[in-house]
Length: 377
Image (cartoon, rainbow, N blue to C red; front, side, top):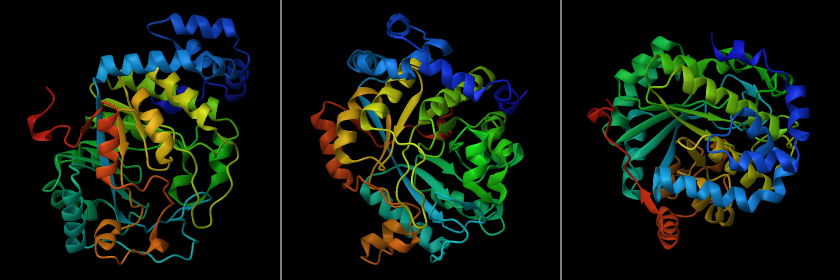
């Protein structure tokens, strides 16, 4: 069985009604649990839980410190290409967007790696649009080993692949894959994904299963808030996905993220909005539900918001992100071209400023998590 089979047994509308039907009493019970179940998570995600946000935050912070100490991992996305064969309503890389297209060469990749290393980063997330004919396995085979020489931990965020492809990537040095479903609401997914292979909901949905089958160490899940009309139900569905994967692929580690839609070329307005307070509630709920899972917060969020939230439950964060291919070396050379970017970021602080703030808050920035050659047996 794959998760797509399990998702077919879940009724979106019924779960939505259950979440909105939770009471103060349900929230209080959930807060007493050391191991909240799916029903407790509904209560923690519900509007009724908003008045218990302080209690949720205190408990989330306590659990985070117990599980992760005072550490916060730092990583940086490195965009290899903005070529994309998909048409998505919310993405600057969409096929029909009249933007300059670029795929990095070997020399450009080396230049990016060197610039990233000078910034201090050793954990890198490789990102591409979905264009397998030019940015597929042959391209990855040529260039992943080059990047691997410059980093201690390597993750990817690319098109969904087969189990065999993921196993091959692991043999080349890949440590993890971030693959966000975007939304678990099938009608909303179809509405936003108009052309290309990304229209195949189940192929994407079952990709984390294939990643787990390939024994890749880390699997990242995520919901892009603003695509469906109910972020609470979307986040609950992601938690169902997480719990399924934890039981099925227990050898892997997991992370979750709840990015909010950001402006981009040709982009849409969100179908639902999430306030800062609501995002804090969701992140706290996820921490209480999954104490051992990494929670990721990206530069989509403002510096002020990140500074306030990271000490509570966040264990992985990006910094100084450029969302275009060649963004770091071009910025270093003052030749940046914003027309290449996927979306705009909010927190553009230099890594030194981010690290200084974390240190002031009593947190320990982690530039290097591990060396994959040491294994995790």
